[in-house]
Image (tube, rainbow, N blue to C red):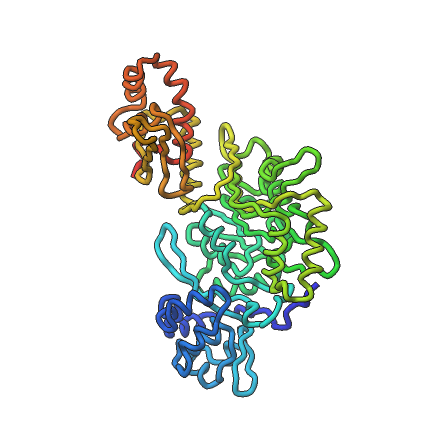
Length: 508
């Protein structure tokens, strides 16, 4: 197992957090000013772990923004006098008091990163300062086991899929640096943020205080233990779902490893979460799941479905599948070990042996939504490898459509504004051999339809009722209305569920 960090956890002292926020605001330590300071190409390079382009761009610049950029964004020591000038309210002693840096002679040595993180939600555009542990670039080596990650790809993905709904009580399980709790707090009366890591909770609380967010309560503990007996309208989680061998010499990182075998942590979450949902409450999480060749060749999506009671709504979207080899390489590299390191091959062998022991053939990654709804439950398992956008809004609209259809087909439908039609014809033919409806936003679905369904969708302008359109088509195609409707109705319902058709009264 890797060693734990030798840096102390942050100390989220309220007055010092307020002073830090005032100094960062005065310095304009935000994404766009930094991007202008060192240039777009250098800024993009930082996302790939390259800081040299930034250092070259700000070489010789002793200004406030350049100093704080090197110290807090890159994690590099800076002259004490320059830091004191850049943080006049907090001072070097205050930065040390927060646990974000150490003073060593004439230098201030960072113990944490603190980076601006922009976001967009239903209320508009905003930006926070997010503190986290030094990354592998700043450390120049593998991460400690208790590393607290900043805002990474998984964090951004979860933020994009959380439904934009107003709730009274929310839970962020496994909060890490606290980014999900901050986002949910914008549309929740109160948020409970939990984590098994006291270090992570210290960062999360500091980030809340620095950004002036006061409706989050922080609790330490594993899984649902800190909220036993409570229920929530919304539960979000980016749990430590990475499948890691429980073998000697394999690092266990708190931010990604749940300490269980295979995908048991995701299973445990999904089996437990119904007990913590209010009526109508929903849970959303990211996860990995295994497909196994253990006799029945159980696909990962089917295994996930078996973990959630059938009387609850379940919507699982698998975004990608990796082979055991590709998965192992991904997460070994994530910990800072590369194929040129001596430790790489033993780690790879441990991963592949672990997967082989369970007959794992593939590992899926995706989104899971569970809801304690009313009426007939939605059970939807699908693979969507195509680009997606506004997933949170698409999930919310999908659930609303499911609830609406439970009361019958809407009287009037409108084609969604992002839907286009594509027709493919063979040379010399007037009639298309393929007609596709294409969704420009949301899940970006492409759906093949026949002439009758294409005509129905084309007539959905909000003026004619569903019955009027179906009756007209029955006359045009010279078929009994009952026969046409029996063919069209289930496919129309699916288009409503998918968001290509929307009730006229809710159309934008």
